[in-house]
Length: 150
Image (tube, rainbow, N blue to C red):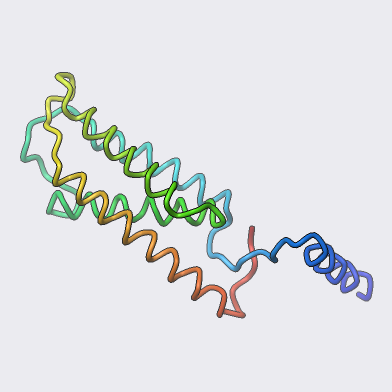
């Protein structure tokens, strides 16, 4: 028992000595969040690029709300997978993904149209997702009962 305690103290001492911070408390490990992000990207890409006519049913019932919730989820998962990454590059990468989807939808193969209002909804979702991730990270730091994962 004393050895186990000593190992924990030495690991904490090593983190303090090399300037690294202890792991944050999270609900998902980074690996789990990264895998969930990959799965969400694949699913969203498939759903967004299914050939079809305009006016088809949406997941939530309003197309723009689909965009907001999808991109909020992507931003949240991206922050959970890479918690130390800067927010601006994350937002730019996700917005670029949204542009790529809109360009893909405008091809003859997909037969749908690109929309600036969809891009705006994507942007709103990204901002909301990053804000939620920030809030959840702050909340997690105050929860002593949540196990540490990395």
